[in-house]
Image (cartoon, rainbow, N blue to C red; front, side):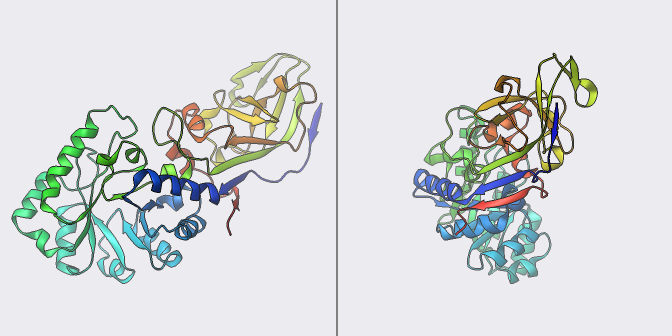
Length: 362
């Protein structure tokens, strides 16, 4: 039997009270460090406007974003906040200064440019202590110190980024702290920033004066193992569009990657990889439907997925029922694990075509 009905699109619910709760949790854990929220990539895909305004209401007065363009957008949302630009001024020193943005200087060339063009304006400095991605090497910091460059630069923050903070026993963690501590002898009295979401939970030595939570704010588990100390913020749901009760053995989906026996019940759900649901979840992921976890079967397609709902019984599922694809029952990290990726990628790939509903906005 086939049943069809017009349905609303897939929906992403963003619980701003849960976001605020996570911010308060991080404040309590990280004290006396200040908390600067990381809002890059449109607040990890959740929407920079609603997220920034709610965090500002909670008292958050410092933010990190990725680019100058993101900084200019955020400045229009939180006009009085301290905003750090992780990619630096990008050659646009005048624009950065005009918007009162604080660039994170990552190369000796950026340092020289800022010292030459904006010596009285605040800047931050990133030191590469083991990530091998961006930031000055400790030797470059020493060389510039020997040239008295730091006396001509108004540094307000010196930071580094932990490569393996989500693995507490990894030997690179203490090695990075040792390197950073040595470099910081050049910057007496300048605030430091070390802890990302995972680093915050490693302890005081891994935090510095300013912590930079991102994933944990948005409900992602900061460590690879153990219970999550934060509350889910997003809930991704979609409706059942059609139900098939198989009279014979049938394959399901593109490539016929799975075959179900006669008597199986298949529910088609109105969400796919165009909505940000990873294609890798085919035959690996799960949904929560009418009180039970049910498997995603067949390949994830652009707009649709199929679920094996046989376990729900003959009348356990109807057209229009809501399936949770991520939320309180199917946690963000579970989706990431099933897709063989990380929670960051799941969040930042959520499609703009998803209908977004902001809960507890006022």
